[in-house]
Image (tube, rainbow, N blue to C red):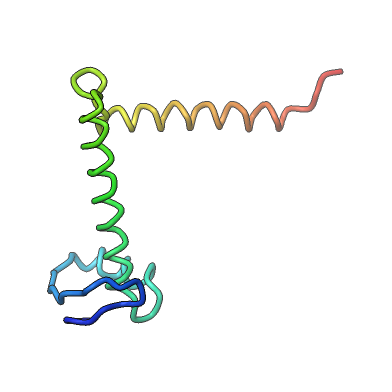
Length: 97
C-alpha cells in the first residue's frame, strides 16, 4: 500500500524490514493471507498505545516507586495467574457436604 489510503483513512508508507526466519514464519502463520503488513502494523500500534498510556500515567504522577515497569507488570501477571489457578482448583474440588 505504498502511498495509498486504507479503509480507515490511514496513509501507508512502504518499509522493508528483515526478520529472523522463525519470526517471519510466525507472521506468515498469524496473518491472514496477504495481510502481513496489517498484522505487523497492529502489533506496532499496540506497542505505541502501551507507551502512550505509560507516558500519560507518568504525567499523572505514576513515577518513581509507583512507575509501571515491565517487572511490575510481570509480577502482577504472576499474581493474577496464581489467583486464577487457585479459583480453578477450588471449582474442581467437590463440595464436602
